Image 1 (spheres, rainbow, N blue to C red):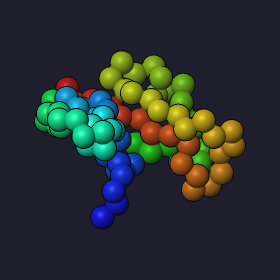
Image 2 (image 1 turned 120 degrees about the vertical axis):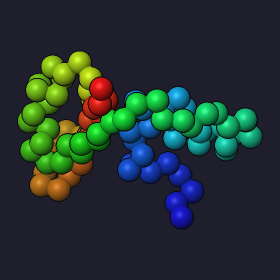
Image 3 (image 1 turned 45 degrees about the vertical axis):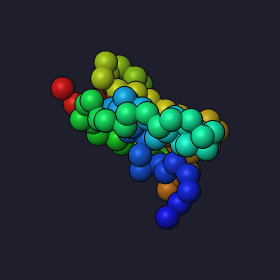
Image 4 (image 1 turned 180 degrees about the horizontal axis):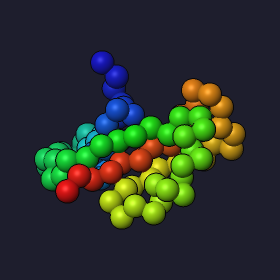
Length: 88
């Protein structure tokens, strides 16, 4: 068990009413939990190493939410960001 949000659930920002991040803050602050219901199906793609070179292609998509982690250098196996794409 990890008492924190996890990178396997980043998709909740795009596809749920309340993301895992907001839910975590609510829980830690003693606030009422929100509705975690998924409103859309989605696919999350990790941008690892040179995958970041495809960034211009991802940014052209209307249904993609791009998150970059601000890392200055791409290296093999290094997670540079992720893209969540809503399925319609």
